[in-house]
Length: 160
Image (cartoon, rainbow, N blue to C red; front, side, top):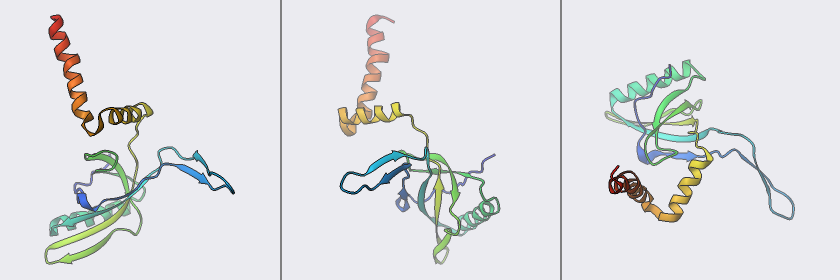
């Protein structure tokens, strides 16, 4: 069973290095060559937790557990692939967890995580691109209106 890290990093602390799995070869006198090399390669994320005493004890104990069980991923809720918290499989990058600051009973812990990306199919990506290009930032409201017309207004009009 995968263990869940219960503390969510501070939302203003994220630094995500997305890995797209693309290799770029620089060619003399022209445009470089690009090709897909690795599917679903991991992202690297730097995170920070502002903790109370008990939260700090918890995160340290969790990090020690993760180190003792090296290679065993844990779950964590992160804002990475979407604008909302989603659950990801993670590992601590070795030797990156540290106490950055301690003032009284306030602790700031930082770490770098290797995070497995969520899997999106190309149809979903294309749909998101098309919706944004057609309706801009208000596309979710337009989808709700279309859903209402298709599922409620038309059946009601037809007497269904």
